[in-house]
Amino acid sequence: MPERKARNVGPSGIEIAYERFGDPDAPPALLIMGAGAQMINWPEGFCQALVDRGLQVIRFDTRDAGRSTHFSNAPAPDFAAALTGDLSTASYTLSDLAADTVGLLDALGLTGVHLVGSSMGGMIAQMIAIEYPERTRSLTSMMSTTGEPGVGEADFTVFSDLGAPPRDRDAFVDWQVRALRLAASPAFAFDAAAAAERAGRVFDRGYDPLGIQRQGLAVVATGDRTERLRSLKVPTLVVHGAADIVCDVNGGRATAAAVPGAELVILEGMGHSLPQELWPELATRISEFVHHVETVTA
Image (tube, rainbow, N blue to C red; front, top):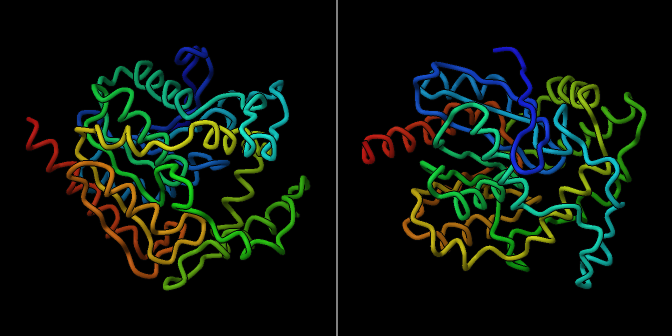
């Protein structure tokens, strides 16, 4: 399906770029990507693997990413101040990102979906399940965490030599490939050519360094979701890589422990990435979970 744009979406009235794949009558799986990532960071082959297993797939750019609305006039994010409790430069929270997403569902005429969120996308999916349970058929939280301090933290020492992302396209592509290689899954091949091709598309579609920071500050401003997750009555699957250095695997364990009845899947050798070798297993686990939920709730 071609890329489309929904306008006047949600309480903020923003524009959201999206794509829709598969049979429109199949169970809808809404894919939500992480901080600074765009919908194309869900690989087309992985989306097709979900479609081949009987799902309808929707992927989209969150606010401040890709071809959706960018909050360019917002204050420059001040993380140092935020960590002392001063959240005055936070332009929004995960609740606002959740409201955007539900607004997209309204625009698409979808009363409920199966949420599949990766990294910060998992946090947004959790927030939708918490605040809009009536729109949530199921929750799959991948490579994510609860917001509890000390849980799901990154090993920033690994990235210490990267430096800031450059603004020149070629330099950015090189920087992005190096960053993705560091975060990749050590037990699986890293496809540098595919990473470079996608990085170029990311740059061309609307690379926004401050947008990435605004999204990151939204996570800080939202805080710990653990107690709210304990109240969920939504079927939940938690997937995490044992070798994740961007969001430690204890974040996945904490998420599964917080959500009543959640199923936890930890994949050995998987980092903070979607290696092609794992697409069949991930697509099968997600689709079987979704179809099971559909059967039970029919």
